[in-house]
Image 1 (tube, rainbow, N blue to C red):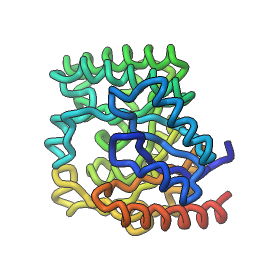
Image 2: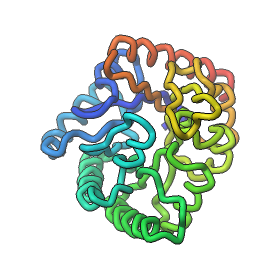
Image 3: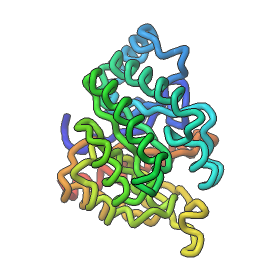
Image 4: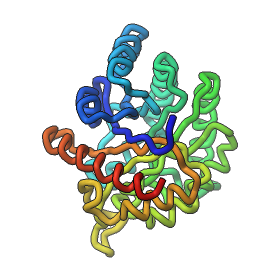
Length: 282
């Protein structure tokens, strides 16, 4: 695969990603996909999806998990409901992620990803230690499928994410870097964070956002905006990706599934922006 191929976050039959025909129409050669509903994680569904991607000359680069009961209504609700951190839903969600890994294998995809949730800040706490053990078990299953697990950034600082990955002690745990999430969650300057974690970044999102007011950061959401219209600084972002040696796909994510026309328009503009920056930097 050539360096920095353009990508987009898409969906099979679930999630906020664009429909595959949008990627095809825009001439986008790679996709990350949100895993389909459980009843359609079958060989037949995988074969049908692969037939569509082959016909469109599209490569699937990562399959993302998401779970019933998750809510991003506000930051406290996200902390309470998202990922593998909530203990009441953890066992079922880990099993679902293992099934998603199995489905990704049917697609021939070597990476699965997710928001693991708000990792407990105290590394000595029981909650942190149990999450470590849970993550190890998932990684062992993912590894048996010949895959990596990519944790999406945003809910932890770069330093705490590095601590967590170090403590898990598995060689197939990496990072899906989303610069906008660092701004949306108020967890740190995305460029400085990328410099710290860049050696572990194996996939990225190209997404943009504006900060919440200074006294609200980490308490209230920032605002997602079209690529190039926010506070990330796409030129600096790509320059930093080049500095840390990242050569994988540049996967556009635009989470406005309630407005599909605007979503498609913004993604098309994002493709143009990334192509111009690529031409300058590569």
